[in-house]
Length: 250
Image (cartoon, rainbow, N blue to C red; front, side, top):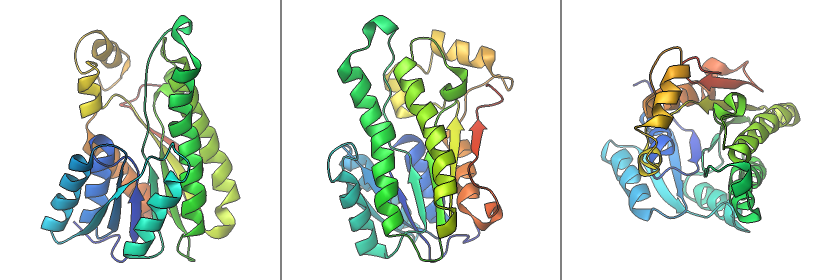
């Protein structure tokens, strides 16, 4: 792989597994020094770091719960202390829970909004204070649900529609600092989380495949490669976009 990100510093949130782990691996393979943020799975984050360093890359595990007060500050501070100013921020950390209107509670609402929306905003705020003076790139991991709006996902879909809107707002706000802001909206990707929720087989997967023109679910590599493109100079005139990587489902 060409060293597109040689000398660059990236912070990837929620990078101990799934899409976040693959993004960290791909950015590191292209030369970036990566802060691998995790909230609970130290083992997962250490595994990602080990995989990167085994290939001669640079990475550290950064423990921080971004939904908690001070979490964003800690994640950014540790990354900057290890590697210097940030060039790339990937806001991937997120949670989802499904339920019909009757199942919604304040806890159900806040657990998702506090991380998916507030955590993303506070991490972006803190990272921008420590960005490279030459600018850089923020990529928000949104979701295909923001436009597909499946039943029983009112709160989760609302968080991701918020991420799309925030992406648009911040692209305008941060343009004078030469920071581009884009979102990647994945379709169903078979990750550890999807498997543990039981969505990788049965009704949910069948429905997704039936409404997806390409007729299949996606792979983590197919999301990470798009993130790497948006972070690179190949996308130097792209900002404020939501790029749906959903196999054509909208």
